[in-house]
Length: 376
Image (cartoon, rainbow, N blue to C red):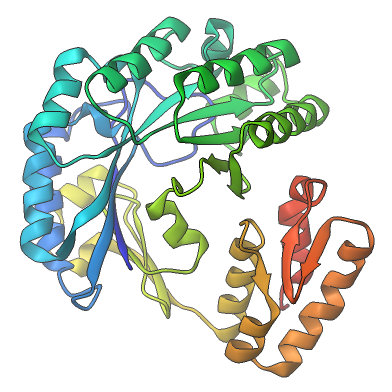
């Protein structure tokens, strides 16, 4: 079933590593929700009346929204789309925003039923390197307060490969996560994206550079520790107890349809992809879809094949050769199977009755393996 993503672009301050569209300014704060409500009306037919199974508030920092604003947005969505009664409704949140009062209001006054808390690390020197607002203690207390407020469907983000993060500290981060008995973990390697503050500061010698070897060590620790506790590594960066996968993000990985609302948000309906303007002034002034959507591209057969290979290989469900044959034909299937054989020979891919999944070793090279299999 399709999902809806809402991009909330406001932040108290920009993290050094972030390359998502966000602004450390509240200049257009009051105009944002009215503009979002306009877009909801304008995009009412994008998902063709299908039932919606997930709503995801991402950012930016969605926890900067007041609970009244969240309800206003959810009411507009419910009045425009067919939102399932048991839909997964996720709010990304920064630890410093999760006060007892805010969590109580979220729990009692909204239909938000899943929290994604941006912890990144429980150690202050790591957080300082990343330019996060909160402290390690605040992160721990935020998780505790969320559980006390009655939230059980909680995931946190942790970043590895930070130059200040030792193997011992990384194990401690994971121990703290396990001690909370949370059902889900998202964990990412720190990457230096072009033109981010992190990129600039490293080039100027003001911050230590990111090295591959520690990140590989941290990733292997992550695989071992999560597996030992029964977590399913169901996507390269995501781990969950059985049955606790992120329904929303699984839409992206399994080729489902979704509508993106808000500045810079992307939408996909199976045949085309489009994305909104990455400019708050333009977005809040837009009064028609043509002014909101910056660009739209129709996906060729080659595009759809490449996207299927790239996303499916990242998951525990793998890449299905029979699916490739049914959608793209026998010739494409044969080319895929020929191309993937060297990775099987190297122990990086496992063939399970025509479904191809990455081994633990192969997960370190997921993007490179997928790229080698692309239809040029």
